[in-house]
Image (cartoon, rainbow, N blue to C red; front, side, top):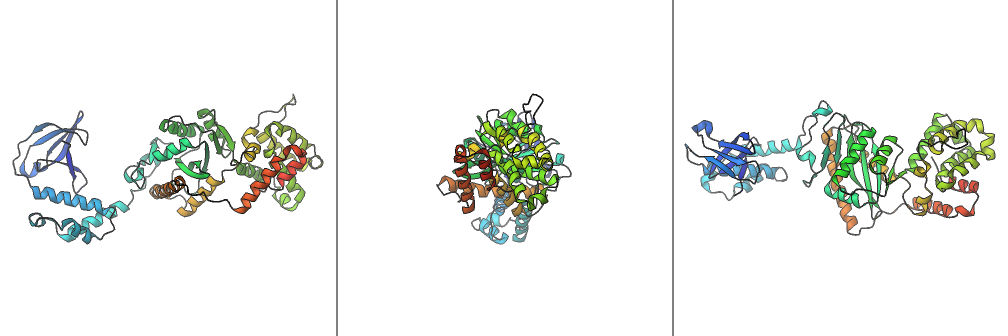
Length: 470
């Protein structure tokens, strides 16, 4: 027969057996020992030894009760426990909750109940306890996440990884999310820093696409952004889901994550976000003090965008087209002005020529930032869906560096919202339509890229450049 428990007023388990209540006394090897709850009042030495499992059994008993069982007292404790549990979720007033709980009780028990005001106070205390978050930790080492903060609003596992060390990593996801992640051939990863709780440096999210719609499936809070930490994250995901190998992942140009991903998923194609590629080039323009020139000189702006347009050249022809661009009249006549930009572009994206007239490996291989095949295959070129989610999340949270408890609660709400969207997608609900201007933009790029073999390289770059902006 399974063990039966009720909860004391202080929240401790009480073993109920044969009409008597027993409090936890001590722990043994694979066993718990319980003694009569009236041990002090009646000097009662009766005790039971049980297995550790909650649905276990009594394995030893020493029963010498010095008092009669008090059935009414047991029933009252059960009633109070049930009222407190219902108070956590019910919107009824304390008085109505008490009234509903006692309306069918026999008078023999009603006479021993606490008065209504006392029971109402118990309900109010329980509700306040539910609403009040734990105290904020002084440092990340003191942070303990358990109970409601480790599960979704439906009570399912949510915190599936916590390394509990100084370089803290918290990974939130559900079993359904992880299974969906496994089904997604393309992943999208990016981080945000604005709204993360104290002690953490970023919230990194991994999204998957299903039915042409993007869903955040893994939420990662990290103290640092080192390669080792990213490897730990990816290993945790691989341990949680067997045979986890996406065909493609799109990320920003953060070298630590890219390097970690190459180590853990060597067969996956890693693509860089074209939006971030453009941002990198624009930041270089700003650092060189050329943003005013870009804004004032139409031809200078067009030529700079032609560098970005190299992302739409077939990879086998990128270097040849880049060198042809450098030999064009504008670049030769403005060599001094463009030199810092060209040096940066070669070091970072193309590779600097060496003495043998070959090029060294760039910081980022151009296969990573190239978009030619992506346009022809109608694949995503950017992480804009992820960026959009981060923007909406930060805006809804409406605060920078909130407490960890508020952050987790908000993350749980977001997970509930995404579960609704996933179910709607599963039911065949059409995915949100792109705005007309983005559809037109994609169509123009596709038309130009499809005509690559019919155009000169410089006209092709110029055609693409007309459609680009920083």
